[in-house]
Image: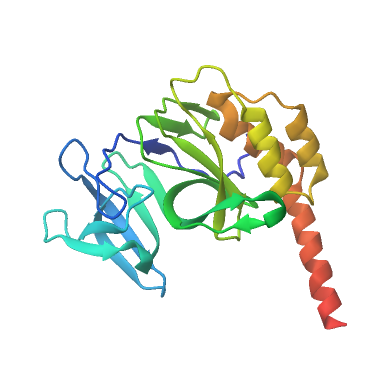
Length: 239
């Protein structure tokens, strides 16, 4: 994989979800990691916070690890950067969960918390609401997963994502994976035919899905196409 791929190891730990409007607990008690909260208005707050899950409407925050707990509304936050005790880094962001309705167009859903895996032209993210999913950027493979470890896809500078595939341990066969990847990539990257051709020719596997998508995207030079289009738009406006 190219060294230019800026990724951090993502470890997704088992979480038991109480409800979409309340925080969840890890084996009965909340674990706090060092965190930097970035609010929608640009304000930054440093301290310790629980790891967010997709439906969280609020998250628990402490100015110090053993300090008083404060509940912060997710609607006020843009992202949370975590560092756990092992030094692993995580970037959680809130994005719209979009759905392609075909001729009816794109339906923008509610905002959800997801963890960024890759964000360079193409955006890849994962849910956290399950198991021991681990993506290792050093060798481009993922291991573990669970009942609802979901992967999402979108564009770097857009605030929405689309559901791509669920990496379930129970599913040994990659049922529908190739079609799901092809459909979403055709929706998002029509301006990069080389990438779409590579997608159609690929036989994706669960444990290398993320890595192969990144490799194929970068090998297709899709970002160069985006830059050329932006220059053309800028020059036409000047005229």
